[in-house]
Image 1: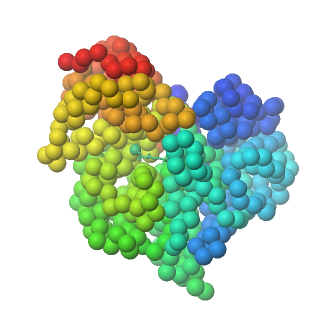
Image 2: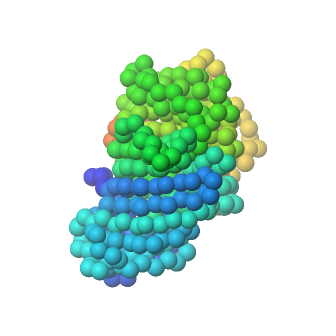
Image 3: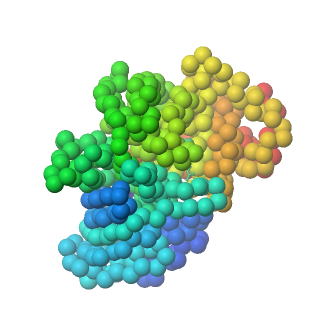
Length: 463
Ligand code: ARG
Ligand code: ZN
């Protein structure tokens, strides 16, 4: 989905397709590139087109662990295309059509290359439908990322895809710089609940022992935030005090935490709306599954908690991501502090709001840890091999606090709201954040950001 932002991912995708950005296999002539142009993840995403919408018809059987799907990807060509790629990991493709006509396709590693019968003209919209099936194979043992993607559980599936696991369950332009809207039609055995992003369209229909759930996410979403979590769930729905619909679900093993999960989700969503700007999506929520992932993920509209009932600090973090990461998305993974630093800072703000330690105290306590390993890892440049390093979280959050002290509370909180408003539903970069902070404060902040984000050492004493 393209937005009229000067540095949005779409323009970067264009240059990648011409081979201008490092690493990605360059598109030769009218072949779309095999990567969208992220130098750290050269094969992630693809060049030559911009996805507007994914229509995913999926059916999953927890017993056999078999997923079968028909994915329709509506895209707009950003160059003439005789061939282009989608990202897909494992699974067997049986048929591909482009605008209804059968297309040739090939597989190499995690690239599905499609050659339509007729060349697609630059700017044309086209629909690609991929029929596929198989037992999804999640991505494992990838530096500090753990296991992610489509993970089978005894009663269903736990689906958390950051950074590039969407390709384990649907053919996609699997990079956050190409956001799109989604419709999910998920069929599971009766008694199983299927949970995806956005809102349910109508009541799930059961026939012949199978139930179909239709969910729609009508706001642009990065592929790693898409989910089809399935299994036995207890749910509670309603509205927050400010009127945002809430969908909370827990695996029966977490029966006792459903009401707190539901209530806190509404309260925190409402509170962040006063601090960060209006809630960007049409519903909020929470899912606790019994798969012990060891982490949570900010799936759009429905953060998922992997095998634990979250405390309100963790919920404050995942719900803050709805603004920072989900609505305002990064353009390149190296800027991950724009997600994790902000969400971690939100935890500190939440602690202060609840009468616990103030953000300033949390900051000072970390600053006093002179031997901490975060000082050698510059958080403004997340490393592919260690993407979720604690520095990206904690030192990223400290960067925001140092900025707040430098520019004052009024300017800082105005900046945060301006940031979420001006990049809502889009993509942004660290350079854009620094630029906005300088513009709104009228100060040269290059020294502050350089010391906090880019130097492999502890910044000099702060006031
Ligand atoms: N964004 C998540 C959070 O901090 C972390 C995801 C970790 N991903 C992974 N594959 N381990 O809320
Ligand atoms: Zn996070």
